[in-house]
Length: 228
Image (cartoon, rainbow, N blue to C red; front, side, top):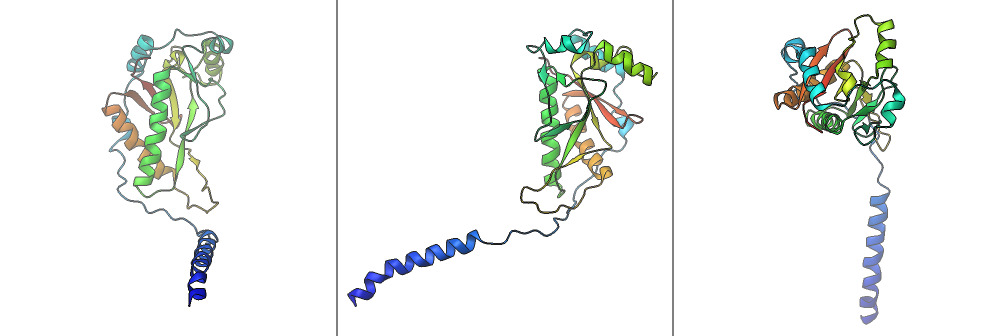
């Protein structure tokens, strides 16, 4: 009888090891992760909800932003006043052709907030994760000159001069791949636009920013109202 009892701890140990091994070998779910959309409302009108005119953007940009700079080289020497932005877990920075990825700290923080709130909203609404795409940031005077050669409607006195302003696309978004390689059902750009509009509407109502809905450019033109 004593010999039987002495073997019990070894038996229990074998059971624990076997159970742990089986749990570790559990097959990952690789089925298509479907969206389960809920409570997606958007805004009544993009133009009316995001109708802040260029004058409003300019007034705050000139009050809290940097002085316009001539060239990209000048921007690189202002690292104490400007924050360099790059693609991260919250947003993607597009291949910029007529701007450079610098913002004043409050604008960079606003962009982080938009990216974070957007991801949280997607989760709450049962949608697979996507990141917003930043399409335009700080423009130098050289950038605007080149842009106006292509687009005569481009403003010669843009809020983008001051490091306070950035554009976020409502046409394109960056899908976030599943860490385990599980395939994800796509979320349409129209649906993502609705969710993004709710996020931006709330930030605008909280007086965090001015926003202009740009139809031809396919973006939300956003200027921070926070100092610093």
